[in-house]
Image (cartoon, rainbow, N blue to C red; front, side, top):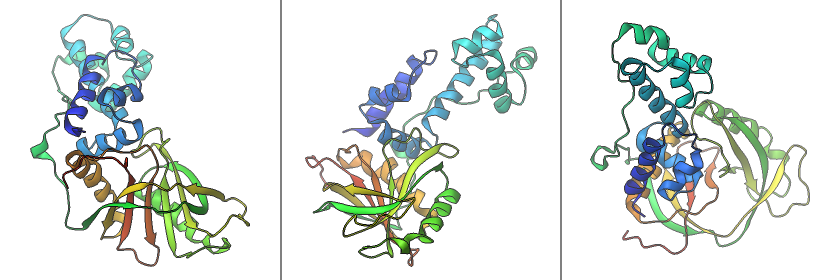
Amino acid sequence: MDYYSCMRKSIDFIEYNIIKNISLKEVADAGGFSLHHFQRIFKAMTGDCLREYIRKRRLTCASFELLYTDARIIEIALKYQFGSQESFTRAFKKVYNKTPAKYRKDKKNITYYHREKIDVENMKHITENIQVVYHSMIEKELKVVGVEYVENYNMSTFNKMLKDFIGRKDIIENAVDSNKIMGICYSDVSDFYPEKRVHYMFCTEVSDFKEIPKGMVAKVLPRREYLVFIHKASREKIDDTYKYIYGSFLPKSGYELLEGEDITMFDYKNNNESRLYVPIKKENNTNN
């Protein structure tokens, strides 16, 4: 899969349909991605979450119409999918520090957000703390028990969830090694960026499901093939590795992603090494 070309197709789709009520899934489909993986790749490549990018582009296009057309503000608001003049005014003022009416009156063009360019040469990433173990098969199903969380995603809440689980993990019976913790990011997240809620689970492997503590859930991780990345830095910097994986490594790799959960495995006593598992299709045409 040529990730860069596919990404351009999705961005073209956004531009061609900027005034339409398009879903995030339609944008992902235009490039041939699943929504889950597309959002992570998009953010890693552009630095913006998908929903926010679309909102910014609509505000920019709307600002041109305020200056260069006689359309009423309510007409522009509805044209660019803001629902009402009030919601458009709030969003516009947050970005331009003035209301749409004042912006039109001042007659000064401020280009807020250009169309994103996917430029391979401008991709920047940090690789010195990342070791790639190209692929690995989890040979058996893994039984895990842990706690599911639905939280706003950022590193602060990630650490809060982890701390909560560490405080509860020792009540899990039949744990294979309670110091080995897994973090599972479910593929049904609605959007993956700060201030949006994500579905996450911290857990540990167990030998059986005989006793599941109150407030915890059991899950079976299927046997499948993964790309494995060893993150050799503190967990606080783990987002840098995910940006590298989705923004640089995967677009060049030739691997096809498999719809499924990303898994992070680490020893909670060792904050400076984690293993990141990204599910891939078994058949691939990589040159690596």
